[in-house]
Length: 73
Image 1 (cartoon, rainbow, N blue to C red):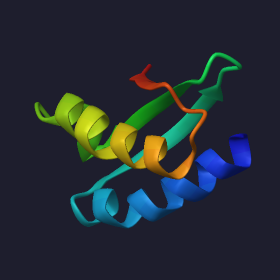
Image 2: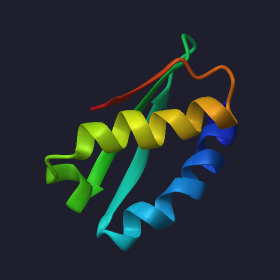
Image 3: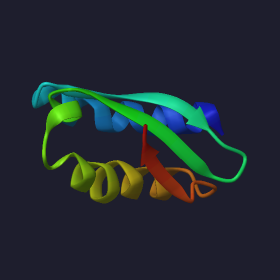
Image 4: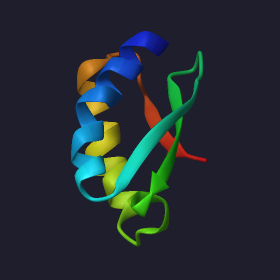
């Protein structure tokens, strides 16, 4: 599952990088919870939770059916 999550994150990264940010995969849990770290401009952006839930989490759930939730650490 970790490889699938990385591939899905690779699809998201260009959009984040255009805005000066990025996302780093921290952990993929057996329970379907994916832990990520938003870096660069995304790490301090007030809209980061919206990016996390409506962007990253939405795409990961579409691409990897076993993903239940994405959380930022």
